[in-house]
Image (cartoon, rainbow, N blue to C red; front, top):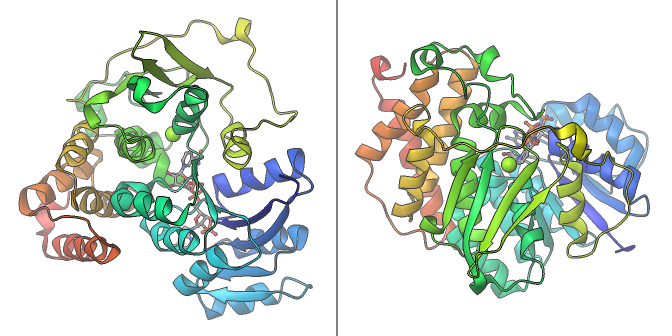
Length: 387
Ligand code: NDP
Ligand code: MG
């Protein structure tokens, strides 16, 4: 572990900056070989000055020039999608942390696997869109994919020492988001600022909106299917407003294991880098007496149709999750710009499901074609239906 060399994609985001905090505080011996960012070039430059990677990636030439003017050490500044893939595949990294947001995360994950790198994955959209391609490819290449998402990390921790065939079901916990107690009419009128107020977690804007619609839990359900080879009917979602139990596994003898911890992504990030080993850190500990009651509720699928749509896509399989993910990403960006309503997100996804013929997802090309279909669907959707 002392030879850990990290290529960090999405360094300037919520998971990216927390990953660097883990390295700073718990693994000061680790080397950072690559850092990537998108719009936040000042922060990327600051992080680069501190960690001195050999490769940095930015989206375009303008930002390449901007970054070059802000750093004073030698490194290769790459651009665009090919730059991201090079950062993922470059020879000196032992692990690629994929903390990118959205579908842009898939191609570098495939590049990392192709180069035989261990992938610690926060970018849930990778497995949602292309789990059927990514998981067999990782197996073929002998590459380990470890989850960063707290729920999947909890499952991984519960599974230690227990064989997968002994799993009866997985229970994913969900905070319920900011609208858990709101009625449907009030949710229908919800504004972007209200949806961005997550009760427990501070995260990037896309996942925060996904958490408010519960699409996030749908994406996590599909991610769990692929990570743990679990059929959708063996994965249950339960609302747990305190976010202390990060998820659970029930075994065939009736035993249920839960992983608990403070609301802090640094533990799952660290575990993704060290699993199954554990290393000492000084992050906050869970204070059981301060936790108060731990409660559980069923999900109201009528109030949160995005979860029902994700379950539908998970069951249909093939290219439907990729179409759902693409439309969701677009719809979330529209909601963030206040161009569509909260339920506009699920309405547009449901419309796309009605119009799409599901195809098998056998290779990355099938995913790109499904996304191209979704892109065209959005373009020709009448303005009156984009609300
Ligand atoms: P953020 O929006 O905070 O960060 C995203 C990162 O990706 C930033 O570095 C951003 O750059 C970069 N980025 C965005 N768009 C592009 C693009 N088109 N090309 C290249 N880079 C891009 O997201 P989060 O950290 O919250 O989430 C990252 C992933 O982790 C998501 O898939 C999310 O679902 C998952 N996740 C997040 C959790 C959290 O606590 N945040 C918890 C569990 C999972 P820049 O900032 O410079 O523009
Ligand atoms: Mg999660």
